[in-house]
Structures are given as C-alpha cells and as structure tokens.
Amino acid sequence: MTWWKRHFGETTRGRIVALLRRGARSVEDLAAELGLTDNAVRAQLATLQRDGVVAAVGIRREGTGGKPATEYGIAPGAGTIFSSAYAPVLRALLDVLEERHSRQELVSLMRSVGRRIAPDTAAKGPLDKRAKAAAALLGELGGDADVVPVDGGYEVRGHGCPLAQAVVGHPETCRAVETMLAESTGTTVREHCYRSNGAPCCRFLITAA
DNA sequence: ATTTCATCTGACATGAGCGG
DNA sequence: CCGCTCATGTCAGATGAAAT
Image (cartoon, rainbow, N blue to C red):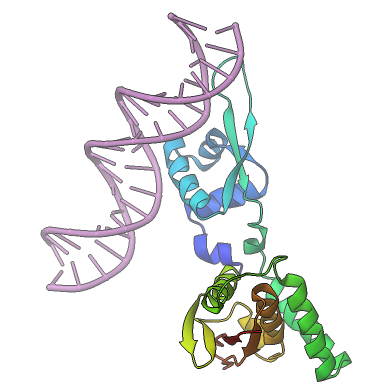
C-alpha cells in the first residue's frame, strides 16, 4: 500500500487526492463529486496544500462575469509519494550491481552517484557552518539530523536513514551519501553509520579538507 | 458602479476516541 | 456514563476579483 493511501485512506482527504490524480478540478467540482459543501472541501484542500500534496494549477473561466474558479491538482514534485516502487527497484538494482561488480567497483559507483546528487554549489565558511549545511542536506532527503562537536571536527548524527531500505544489505549505499556530503560542503567526510536491521542511523564525521 | 461568483471567516453542530 | 478534545462538516455573511 502506498504512503498516501496509508496516510489518508478513505478519508475525505484521500478521496480528494484520488480525484485530483485523475485531473485538475475546482472546489465546486470536488464538492459536487464528494457530496460536500464548498467550505468542507476548502478546509481539506488547505490542509493538503499546506502538506505540499496539492496545489493550484490553473484558472477556469466559465459563463460571463464573476471571478474565475481556481483549479487544483497534484502538486509538482508530489508524485513520488504515490509510488511505493522506488525502494524495491533500488534494492533490486543494488542486488544486480552487486552480482556483476566487485565490492571495490560498487563503492566507486556509489561515489559517482554521490557526486551526481550533490548540489552544484558547495557550502562555504567555517567548519561548523558546513557541518550544519550537511545536516540540512540530509534533512532535505528525509534524514532528520543533528550536528555534534567531536574531537577534530563535527559529527552529523541522523535520526533514522533516508535510504534505510537500501542500506540494510547494501552498506556501500552510505558511500553515496558520504560523497554527496563531502562534495556539498567541501570538507572531508567519513561515514561510520549504524546499520542494524531495525533502524539504521546516519553518522558522518566531518573534518577540514 | 454594478453584477456575479469564488473565496474567506467565524460560529456552531456532530460524532469518534479517550480517560476518569 | 460523563466531560473533554479533535476532526469534520454546515451555514451565513463578508470580502475580493473580474466582467459588463
């Protein structure tokens, strides 16, 4: 079951999302199809907009006068929340790569992936600022992280791992993140992630380059 | 300016879940 | 059972934007 179905199920929000996945609709359209008032739809739309799931995608003009209706649709970039395919596809891809390549080649591949997903511009300034930028980047990927001063540098400690499903069984995945953080902060990054079956957690030691 | 209709706001009702 | 909270929904009226 996909995240959004688990999250919204057969609630009004879930029904609104299901309708908007089929095409853009106005508040009036949604209210008519759901058998609700416009205000009830608006309340749910406001929540969905706040969560970044839906967005105003256009204007529809009907009749002669009056304010044109806003059309709502699925927010750009929200498409991935409707899919549960990414994790199994990534795991399978890593399985195949592992079968066909040596561990050394796999690590090299992961480093290339890390360079590719790193932002174009690297963070600048003192080391603590760069460490915070690394934690923020990890956060953007879904890995809530803190920065802790340690001997010789800083440690970025994630609460959970954004690639947990891939990391368990393919620890070299962490090398991609390690490289991404090094590229994006212009520092030396060493991963020593905690990889239990239950809940892997990111640990990256950041020192001056 | 007037008209029309979308949108917003606030008050209120209802039902489910929960703890005492 | 009662009281409380929260989510959800309705209703009425106000406001705003665009066409005439």
